[in-house]
Length: 348
Image 1 (tube, rainbow, N blue to C red):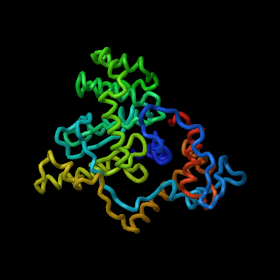
Image 2: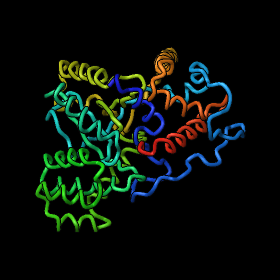
Image 3: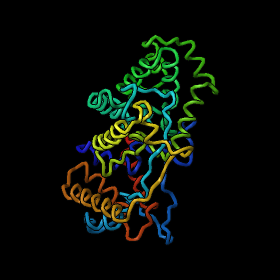
Image 4: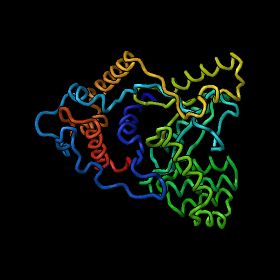
């Protein structure tokens, strides 16, 4: 994770790899707007920069001093989310000490890497201790995301959990082929009755669509902002200052302590995340811890910025193009997102 955290960080911070359109729920797919930053103003009424400022390049220190808290927002509260596992697709330990819940979708490039590379590595490393749970979160600007989710659920309904994961892997392995014909072909290869599948897809009120929408709404309630969005025993994975393995290890230690204290292994997840009817439990983060986190992110950012690696500098230049003294954070980040969408359309 640490070797790729910079690129993940920028994608997750700006678009969270595949960022959702917060104004429109992920129902029927719709194209992304052409101009996400039109008519933006700062709090003081100044125009948002829409191209790189003329003159000398902005130093790494200046860039962070102006916008560090925008690029690397430090949470004021620590949150544990009570996300129900339910009957969602899952694999790994039957009675896990660590439950990793992933909100994902089939057309997101970052989800492909997570699903095909990282999940198998984690399940091998934490064999018998880790369970991975898949929650649907189809993004509305991905044309085939919801259709793929519906087909995936019909594959599971007809052929079982193992078939779902085989479909999951096959789609990600051939993501560039995604479309109705490919989805039908893949489902057929897993033994699915295509006549039944066609009826389900044609039914606007099919049970899978209702389920997928319910999971999307759950994601909204637990602050999902894009895909993949990861929770480990209810704790949101933050690639800005965390290593996923270290987070799993920390939660594993808590789970083992709970079991040693008498919590049945089958009830560990509920013991760690359940706070009654609330979907999340917040506790304040001390000011000194907030300052420590921000300083850690500054050190990280300056080291990467000053290294002048081509991929890193590409993103630094996007940030610099929107940089202006005293610009409001929301305006700055909208401008950066616009720059990313214009120059890196494949990020969508």
